[in-house]
Image (cartoon, rainbow, N blue to C red; front, side):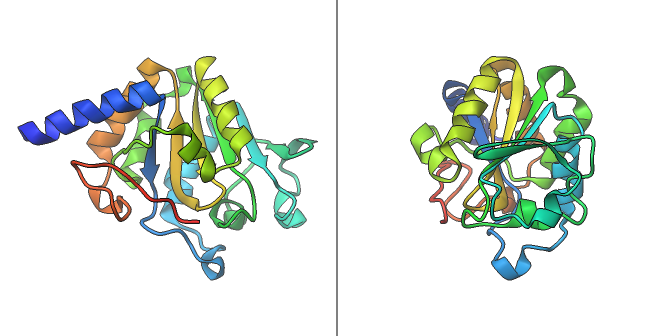
Length: 214
């Protein structure tokens, strides 16, 4: 890294620590409805890796998801959300559940104990963009089920790393919440491994901002 890059990432890391979260993109653009059943490499190398370590996988606003996609994977159901069984395959044949956009579903929240944040998990960032920060929590909630983000903040304060897939944009990006030490570990891994070309329009190495679709 040159001096400008180092200064930028140092400042951005401070922004992430202050906000308690950062974002990475998995795709430059969200998938259209006719693409929602596609299987992508990020399903295998990101989503599946997160699910297999999860102690909580919660799908908010599940009512518009076809019932057959939820067969055999629901642990419990309450008003407004279902908890999915992370010991089951939540990806193969269920890509639509992750990909679909425009609030056909709510946020999908995955919580992982900080003790499971190992080097192998950090390899997920080889399939994401480098990190960027949206510090305004109200702006973050616009792309999510608001109660999911409130829960993410709570769980992060209790020792979990939390990965939230957008209700608006599906699998396009993930908002990540964690305590300071683990957040820093994940942020540095995203800097080292992330792919600059996956940044969405409007994000640059010097000025990380994003206008949300949807």
